[in-house]
Amino acid sequence: MKLKDRVVIITGAAHGIGEAYARRCVKEGAAVLVADIDGEAGRRLAEELQAAGGKAAAERVDVSSPEETRRMADVAVKRFGRIDALVCNAGIYPLTEWEKITLDDWQRVLNVNLTGTFLCCKAVVPRMKEQRRGSIVTIASSTFWSGSPRLAHYIASKGGVIGLTRAMAKEFGPYGITVNCVAPGLTQTATVRNAYAEEWFQKRIDEQCIKRKQMPEDLTGAIVFLCSEDAAFVTGQCLQVNGGMSFN
Ligand SMILES: NC(=O)c1ccc[n+]([C@@H]2O[C@H](COP(=O)([O-])OP(=O)(O)OC[C@H]3O[C@@H](n4cnc5c(N)ncnc54)[C@H](O)[C@@H]3O)[C@@H](O)[C@H]2O)c1
Image 1: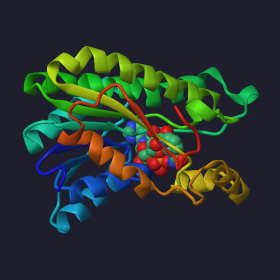
Image 2 (image 1 turned 180 degrees about the vertical axis):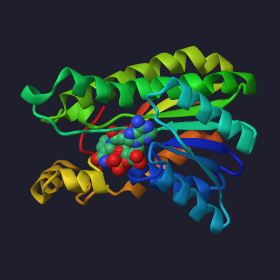
Image 3 (image 1 turned 180 degrees about the horizontal axis):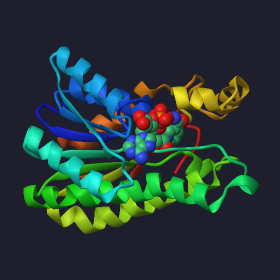
């Protein structure tokens, strides 16, 4: 129970890797707010976690909306009394060739991945400053180091997330707030499986030190650690969890 009674907001937690974070954090004793634009799936997951004896609630939120992210923070406080951790996991990664990326595509990806991270942090930091304690975990991608075709807008947004993480670590450290980043490798979620052919996964495995597909559960230990008291003196870092596909 490494997160016993900690209140953790996880964005994009209704599906994919975020869902694995939510399940693991509840198992570790946290009260989790499942914050996702797919409100219905978020509600179903929160109900399932509650039925199994865990503490969870759901809120529909578009992370690119200032009003909705503020409401997300308010709901967490109303439901659970405070906010100990925020995991900025919501993200989109539409595969688009360079020639076909329109300004709208570019802005949409930046809005969700980078501005969304900024807005969620904006929403929770006043409360964390009051508490003089908090853990923020942002989510980047190993593609920041390795590069990858058809993802120029996405990789640019994740580079921004890493920069924002470092800036916030310096700014919020004096208030007892840590800010770290986790960078996943290519991970088997439904969205990824629909986007890539099997040969692509094999190529990635060839580049890894550990020779198997990466699963959402491979990432949950890093999140639990960074949201826990054990990481109270760790801040401004970016941890790549990718079976050794690329290094910092
Ligand atoms: N899967 C991978 O290979 C991989 C690799 C590196 C980084 N990542 C990052 O991990 C995170 C999760 O990826 P995933 O593969 O689980 O994605 P996913 O598509 O499986 O799930 C994303 C979740 O975010 C939600 N979401 C989308 N837009 C939102 C918005 N505007 N507001 C709130 N919620 C929104 C979706 O409803 C969904 O529940 C993303 O930030 C992604 O960039 C994933």
